[in-house]
Image 1 (spheres, rainbow, N blue to C red):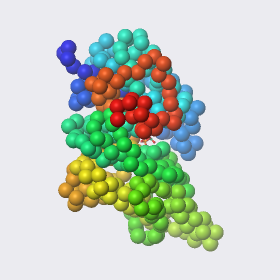
Image 2 (cartoon, rainbow, N blue to C red):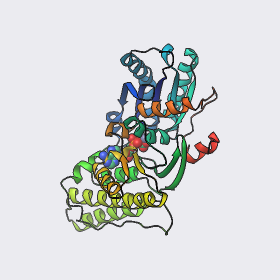
Image 3 (cartoon, rainbow, N blue to C red):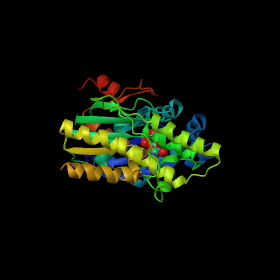
Image 4 (cartoon, helix red, strand yellow):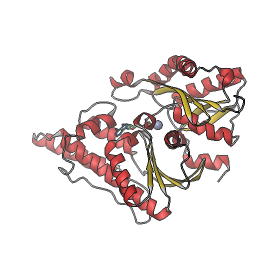
Length: 347
Ligand code: KG4
Ligand code: ZN
């Protein structure tokens, strides 16, 4: 139909090559995620140069499959939306260059999407009519942000981690426990049969009035416990260490988030980013939000980790706001959410 808005979303910021087609910001017609996890698993983490090469190989077929499954061609699209930061520079460049080439060849507008805002927009895939102001906890491999959204495409970062991101802490502790890669889901699995009260790991409390987080003290405490046990020749139950660590992360995140919900008066709490797939975190925040009489929304696990649908969803809002990029668009590996709204001049 002539008035339909059809957005192709492209995501290549880390190790997933993903594309999705979204109709009118409500119907996801297709979504393809080509994951490189197995390629990187043998190295115990993402190898940036390999990730870029894999994106080069996978981007074309991924986009073609997403369009084919949606029953659409480039000519049907309203615009192409692509993640341009933050992330690995080589990986981002493949997506940005590819999207620019496709948009230019098809004569379609290009939309630049910040990966962090895309994670927040994953919530709108579940509930397109979420009300503002919205408080969002963004917990990924590289970022831990508490964000107040007064309206669409407007972000006020209330707090952020001062050291490790929550996902980074999960990955480092998982590696020390010998659980493998990717660490977060494997640690969650191990923690299921563990005792969360077995170890009293620290919950860093920063100065009063700060909404920032800190996870490096917790991570170091876990590593110290493991090292001490090794030196003494003791064997610790991996499940107990995992469950106690996870409980500490959930406590740290929940305490600040619930306090921010009360202070800001936001009526809805949203979650985003890979760590949002963690069931212990989801259950805790759902229960605490309900106790305050507020609403809780979180993306299904597939939309928590990197995907093209969240980029298309954010791209839809940018399309409505006529927020288009020009052909000089470049990858910005250190892009932040704050920079983004300053750049857009909309706050
Ligand atoms: O959002 P994401 O896919 O990529 C980034 O933008 O960083 O997040 C990946 C992070 C990794 O650190 C991964 O270990 C973590 O999310 N993660 C989890 C779970 N699933 C993914 N952490 C805890 N529990 C999970 N179930
Ligand atoms: Zn991500």
